[in-house]
Length: 306
Image (cartoon, rainbow, N blue to C red):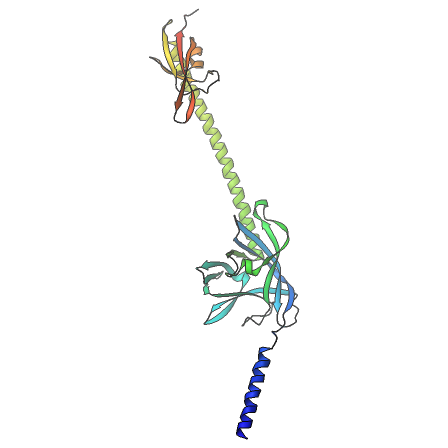
């Protein structure tokens, strides 16, 4: 009898194990929930930072439920336990190596975590386990284009795996803004843009004033050279070589500066204004570093007074 009873017990255990192996997984229910207030996330895009405004989320739940308005929570922790933070109370999320992540709260608390999940809960709920609220699958909202003053680019979706999980990518959150914080950020950006524009305008005015000052100084120096050139005796002839190369095939303009024997530097225009006649006698193909052109040889003669 004992052997028969023992056989029945073993058979019952085997049947139980078989039934357990054939058990179907719990069904999941899809739901879409509007956020109580939008949240803007900033993360590293392909070529520059990307901004995404989360308006609602799509989530998976193990029980049929309806959450018309929700709040996103972040589960973080490790083998020792987990904690939950509201997403709008987090300042940023930084990657640390391959396995760990820093979560920095706006209250200046720092959490080192290996486990991260996004949950959406009703406004009155505070999760204590990951099964307390549906798990977020996709973020629904719009990209904000920084190049056009953060104008929205139409409704789009972001997979949580692509934007948040170290399993799926490297788009960690540089900044997380609540609606009020985003308004303040836009105001700061507007003020910064105004300051940059004013700085550029001030710099343009400064450069213009400096250019006028340099032009006045160059004119004063040129006038002084003309006065000096007028003082030379009539009939004197000097040989001059151009101070810089002149592009090949182009005429020698009046502003080309020459080094002239005994009288120093002067342009053709200055020589002529002081009563000198000038004549180009040769153009020599030359090269200075990577510049190719002609070196000009010229004679200048002080004309006799009429």
